[in-house]
Length: 361
Image (tube, rainbow, N blue to C red; front, side, top):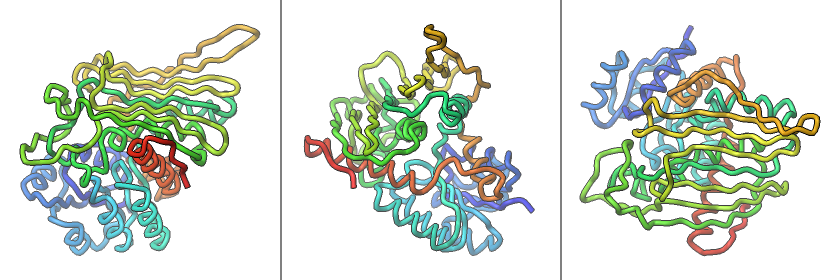
């Protein structure tokens, strides 16, 4: 019998969740959203038979539901996930895991108590380039990774003004928490070491510049709040001695949007990148992955040839959730990793606010 999944939230990621779950053999039985019009339109578009207003309504109306997928503003990740877990459902939650590490710890505890799977949509781990590179990390080709640089930088990519993305109370922060994928991917390659301290700065020079609005996000809200950063830069040292440099932005003076991880291993260096197109999704986007080694005294650059994936791993990540529950694959991420990631983000914001390094406990 196929896994039965209900989705909370009719947002833009719904298309990837439904396609990914279905590709792994699961069925989508219902969508819940507080906006009944958006919910009905999404159900019609993606051929989902039932609609509800709340998770509680959906759980009551679909007693044989196995899992819940969460696509709601960040503030609601923790309460919706815990409600689903306490109802005995597996949970697949959009990024970021929650507003802070404390919330993720509560989510992880609820999952452990319920004996259910809790995973997050760190889809860039599931990109073909990332998965190919990870094989070289795992088979020892790179050796231990000593340092890395993680970037997600945009020139004009603010996702609306006054909406929930720019409201710290609803989002938890700006691009640092929104575009955390490359930080996670770098840590994934580095075997998720334990952080020791973080030194960081955040910038808000362009956060109110209307010419910096990007092609994603939600409509502006003239009565809303815009109180987050437009860029964050940090240096992270781990207890293992490894280090990570981070540069993330919605609005920064750069040539074009770049999403990348570069790392230096004891035996080889590596590079995974996407250069976005004009609107972020057009055919001018460029994906690349390279490995740098020394062979017979000669510098050799290996290009990793992988199939194109315009969805950037989103479909594959959702499929992995289903396969993990069914025991045919290992989960691409764990709650413990999500806790470490959010501790780093918490420390980054704290360091930027205080203007000094912050120890991570």
